Image 1: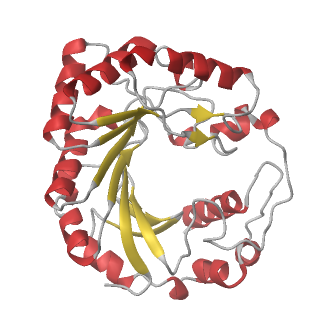
Image 2: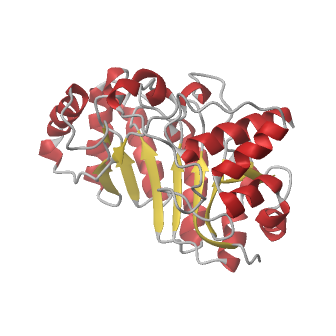
Length: 314
């Protein structure tokens, strides 16, 4: 379909609505308690089928916000992924969408019926500041008891797991409370200073000079814009490659969006491909966008900040 795209993974940011309010959250001010848009499966049904005919998709993941506030849509995505023989069908959840045992049981049953095969359950000092542990434990126990879905505890570590701080110590104590369920613990995430973390946890991170020559694909968790292997679908329907909107799945079919993608015809993408973030800053300056890096910790975050402001002005 496209020489610049070879998809192996599709991510669905189901909603920015969340039951938590975490200091480390990279989504930050986009989170909301109520009224948030969410991905409506009925509007994108068949998208994974189309992609699977053209690419070898290995992984589909739903996260948010809290994706299980919209279980029906998550289940629609996962059931289609199963029909397409996509092997990894995962969600990341904080496990708190209801306090009622009956509702928790219904959600777990629905996920089993939809052939979800892995839950990554966020349990750590940050989530449990605003999320009660009891319903999270109940959710974990019911998933484990069902036996058809693998479940792992998925903590967030401040700086890294080895760092000696009160947050990491509390996280270890919380994980211990799940010991009777004998759940495996993933390597989790090392918190990066962006979003809320850059505001509330900045004191824990050393500010180092940013390498503005860095290009996409050179930074951790990034890929080259002309070798795309992942796309993300957002609650408003935007299809994104990293921080670039390449189309909207509510407004046109995914085949058209993928087929026309060409990073060499986009001035901002071309700047990143040729000279890294330094070249992107030059484009921003030409658009009268002043770039400040005082409270930014990486080249990727500089790029994301610039693109957010450019797209807002367009």
